[in-house]
Length: 326
Ligand code: AMP
Ligand code: MG
Image 1: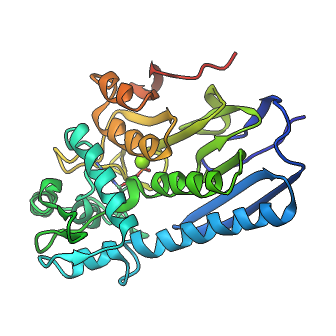
Image 2: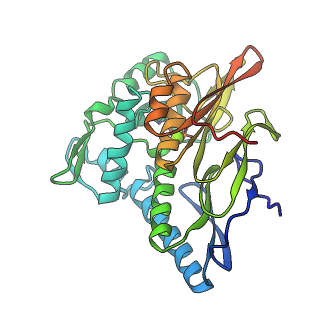
């Protein structure tokens, strides 16, 4: 019994171990949300419960998109920038999202930087035509990217940034949404489900999956495999939004120390029980690399696969709790 599950980051994932039945009804739905495709598949005791669970999961993610989007001017995240330096009251989810993201920013010593909005804007990575900015423009943008000046007031549940700053939710938004999907489905009694959010996978339940790690330069070859029973797998890669100039590839993940796209690394795939942690860590470790990654991975019970450029060839380094394929 093999099933194909095609995504941008995963080539296919095969169920390998069958456990006891958890429901006789199974359903699947795919929708476009947060700028990408979200697919949810689950088993339920009957169709009424199953459809209710799928409806609840999708309406949760659509609501999160309206709160966390940096494209919609009315979202909490956009309003924080538009009303800066005023304190902006936000919903409990936005507050929780920012608290969690800032905690990974601290732990990664700023490799993950949610205040990177002005820098991403100056490279044009949210547009159709990103390009190499002038070094003075990069330096000016970097001065507006200090995540330590994002002020969270838990008593008033408000957020404040300095004028000219903005928050980029791109590195952790999907992971946070997957954690919320997990809570909604678990609360509704769903014990076996799988969600694929633009290539980040999160699953619980009946089957273990043999999950391929996408080769950064091939759509048909896997770089490695992992055996996923429970938890999440997220990848950050230089094959997503990027452009080339004078033979150099400039990709969308920026090093907040230099203001330039990270060089020398093709992809980082992270396995973690918690999808929010997996998403935060894949971006943070794409910036900071394998050296000293273990303490960070241990905090999340996580493992990481680094695809590093060694000249023209790729070197694979695996660290931490990596669920090896048999
Ligand atoms: P991901 O694919 O999860 O690694 O997220 C990458 C996205 O996060 C980029 O497209 C940017 O919008 C944003 N980003 C780029 N560099 C950083 C960084 N150092 N810290 C946080 N977010 C970043
Ligand atoms: Mg990420």
